[in-house]
Length: 144
Image 1 (cartoon, helix red, strand yellow):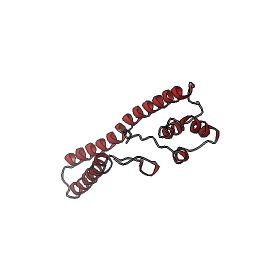
Image 2 (cartoon, helix red, strand yellow):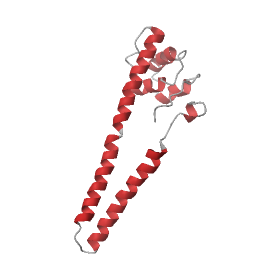
Image 3 (cartoon, helix red, strand yellow):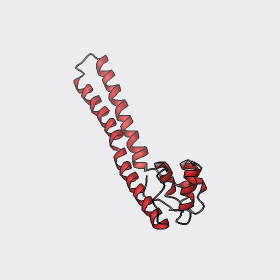
Image 4 (cartoon, one colour):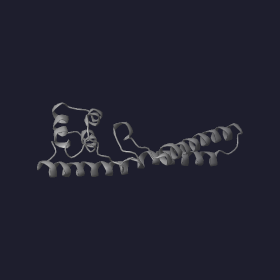
């Protein structure tokens, strides 16, 4: 992988973001079409209704389950950055930093982190502004 920077740091898992989500949408649409066709033929719609309910359930589960690993990653990032700041400065991260600011600070090099963290609080920098202010980028290749 080429060197990570502001322009290329966003990552997508093509299997999940493009294939899996598209297939879920296709199955849901097909289940709706199937139910409409069954109702128009005036036959027992039980199997079509069950198929639609399973499609809706699968769609909802996908939306409900996806945030759980992201929350675990968020907690790990907050802990890692807090520890990194403490190791570099002997002080805890400023409690006025928002979560999104800390997430953006993870890309800052060790040399930039203390100063940039202070700037982020004082100037109320957005996570995007923090990322743009980073001169020496520290890659995070684990988060998707």
